Length: 385
Image (cartoon, rainbow, N blue to C red; front, side, top):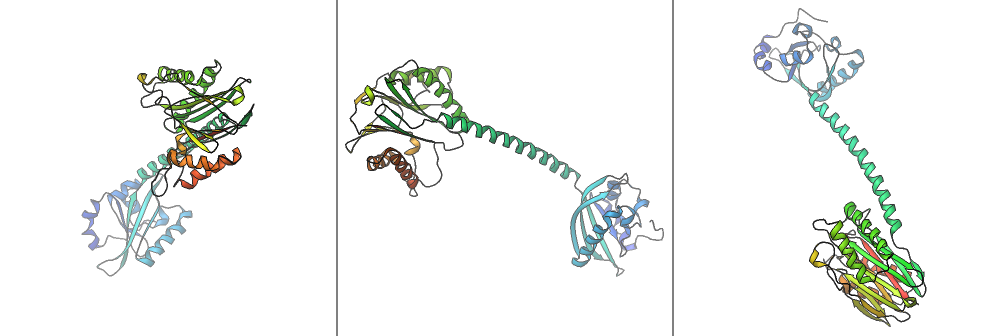
């Protein structure tokens, strides 16, 4: 209730002009928590008349349920000499204005203890925080949607990964592992009756969603072209032309290796462009099959020829196709495994059963590599039995 007897102490009147100039609300209370001074900023914040706060105690403007908390904060201020807490300041119309209360005990020239309270309106900050929470909630929702979409895309891409199989006298072991949830490598193993077994391995530049979309489009076109039964050299040439004409993107390129087995697996036709050299192991001797052409898809003057290598195979021979994710890996000394290191792993495991050979190669690369996978990994091992 107002107390008309309370007068602003003389020492405080000398400071009024300074306190009135402050942008933050200022309250000075006496030992009975009566407001003996409130500056214009505080009165304006609460939309009160000065007479409506002068001499009042907290119970005159705060709701009864909040008084225990206010008294608790006052006790802390008394105990430590100063205190800071976040609460609200009640406006005359009942609106609760979020505020920071910074209190400090002071001793007046009259020897009495007083409390100096600075009230800082943080409404703008709270609005920004609310907007940030809303934005974060929307971002989290979108993130969950993206993760669900990526999970579905990953399942779709994994469903397209080549499976190990047996065709006539050939056995094929395959592996695919993306560096991220989805990647830019793909492989195709497609038989055409007893006439041909086609194997295609492709590595699209980049990682992530864009590369995966381009890889899937090239995958579809590869299957379409294989229906026409082209030789590996012609297949590589046609896919380059398709990408250059239909999917031209600055800086985009891809590499490819294509193999076609015929004569029950005893004859291999091989073509590659910009791809790491394939490896043939025969009687313990390892031979590299280099690409006949450069990278694909980026420039018209890089159109590959339709040339291909023709190779006769003997029982026990093994062909290894892979992407550069298996060779461009570094150890703790920053040394790259390179084709030479992979060739050593292939040669040392070439007498193992195919599935064991595949795992030995993957384990060897993992042992060499320092840090997480940096590129997609694809591997195919084919044996003539």
